[in-house]
Image (spheres, rainbow, N blue to C red):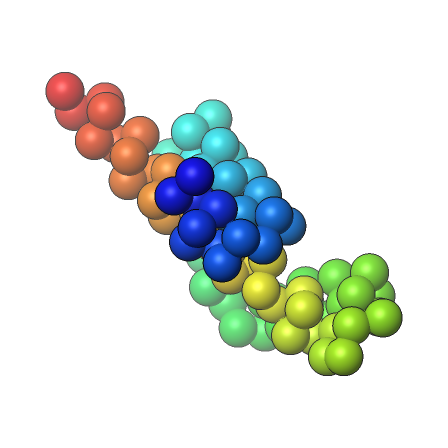
Length: 90
């Protein structure tokens, strides 16, 4: 429930964050580093948002609608990786 609450009860945003967390748990550290590098690159992130905006074309602002799940995925990716590292250190 905290995941859904954190996404203001938006199931799609919560799903994007959960996908990021799950992704972080199953990928190798070098893959995680490369993925974070790609998502932190503003130009590539904007291109991804423009590509994804096609799926949100009925939204008032398709770019903003596409950027929200990208941000949630990035957040989940960071949280999941930090948790995985903490669990491995135990």
